[in-house]
Length: 287
Length: 190
Image (cartoon, rainbow over all chains, first blue to last red; front, top):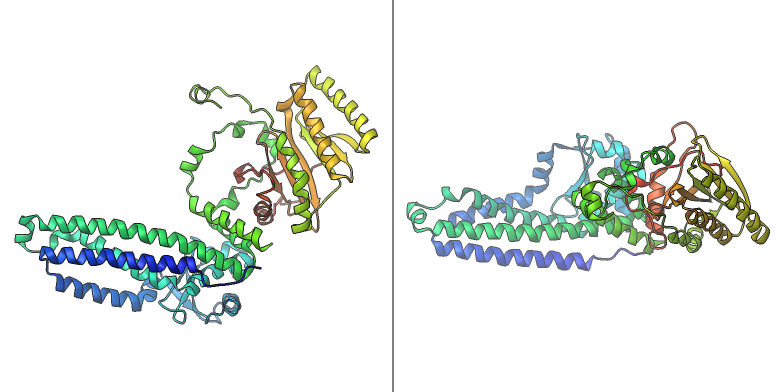
């Protein structure tokens, strides 16, 4: 049996991402200052936004998707499931929210383990059976356990600021700046910061998904439950045919369809396939 | 399929890839050790019939071979037609390796007679509580799992178990990656 341990790979990557982002932003701020743009004001507003984002990120995230916190009496089974998983994972029980939408999804938010919220959509509840739902909830709890939510919140906030500057650059600065071409330099630097931070965040984001998948497999002991949940969410399960082989053999066409490069290029879910492959490796480890 | 075939739209049916059939003989040990799945003691090969004398002659040949084989290895056989008109050669033997080589022998002799295109699939049933079929498609040269959840009304399959079988066995068995090709076969004569 694989034991739960701190995910050193994830921790190292989170640190590195934050460090690199900080470096990128320091350079960014220095460049803006050198250009003589009203930097104090910008820094003040950025600081205020960061403060709000950090302390209200959960409420913002929940409000933006229309999630509603549900009490124990409203969703007893869901609370029961989460409670049991938290006992296994050694976590305080987070609040639980439900989003009314048919799109199957789930997410965790909150800046610390004790102030977290796990949200699931009604579409997810409708599609998944109990063990699959358990696997998805364990995945979200792993995000909380790995404390990667706060890091992502801060990281994406900084990226958002850069994107705002890129898009609204011509409302900043005075006429002298506009004429000297300084503003264009700021715009260019902002664009580079935006792109670099975007790539860093994407890389970290992908890695933390793998970590949470791993955490889910360890908490539930059943990687296959998460595999089938991922397959249901991504629609892979629905792609397994129900029509008899002898019936379709008559058409024969499906054997000739070129697969490989073109099919891979067009397929919409490479990340899901990669996650499933990782889980399958884990399944063989556990067995 | 070559590039020109692709451009010009000419199609050739793929030749059967039967060498990979043998992978099941070793995979069987893992199936039993990790999943408690035991071979059901039989296996089958499904052939799409042709209305031709070659087919009739080959069928007679195969039957002669099977008769001979049953004397040597004790593999019992029977031929059956299903509702689609396909021919099933069902072999029964407690020795799993004899079953695999029996299936391979039939596929080889059909291929040698130029009837390789007519090979639909080979089926190896396993069981513990539920019945699990490993279907080998000669055209894909790969296996895929088929677990009927209930044989009767809904014709539901246990996709979750099938996917789990894939994850456990993917290192030992050549498994078809594209789940869209995991066609079920309902009401098999075994």
